[in-house]
Amino acid sequence: MRVLMLWRHAKAQPATVAEGDHQRSLAERGRADAQRIANRLVLGGPHPELILCSDSRRTMETANAIDRAAGRTLDRIALSDLYHASIDDYLRLIGEFGGTSSTLLIVGHNPTIEAFAEAVTGDSLVRVRPGDLSVYDCAASDWTAATMGDFTRTTVLSPRNE
Image 1 (tube, rainbow, N blue to C red):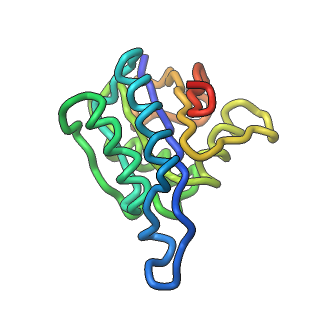
Image 2 (tube, one colour):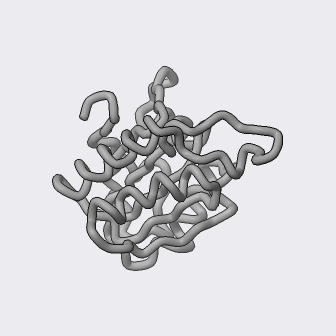
Image 3 (tube, rainbow, N blue to C red):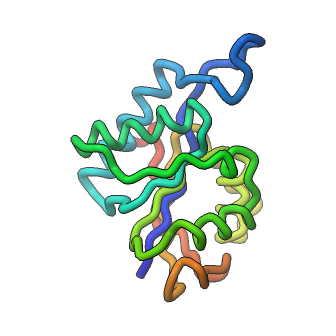
């Protein structure tokens, strides 16, 4: 069984004219929330073998929390394609980069992470807040064959519950 984790970046600072949206950093609360989720993930598993991360500053800072929790730098690929991605883009990138990894983590943005959860659960009222991490089992034989029907959401970690 393959495992996909989707982590919405933690709470970010408001955008400024000078920085713009792509360069927004995490707010103090966002840094603390990301670390709480990362610590829980490292303690309780599963551990990601590969991280696909949007190249925005706030997603990279969110992903850095798991490196601190693990005490080492995990394999990571920063992708500009994740910044304004669709569900189809996620499936394409999972197939393109997932390789032999049994556990894959994507650190990205709404509305795509929420749309993915809605598509898998069939619940149009799914809400994915900043810092939430959802875990999905994937029944596909390999990542290149994965379709939306192969995913089942098994766990949701939220900084508000940790």
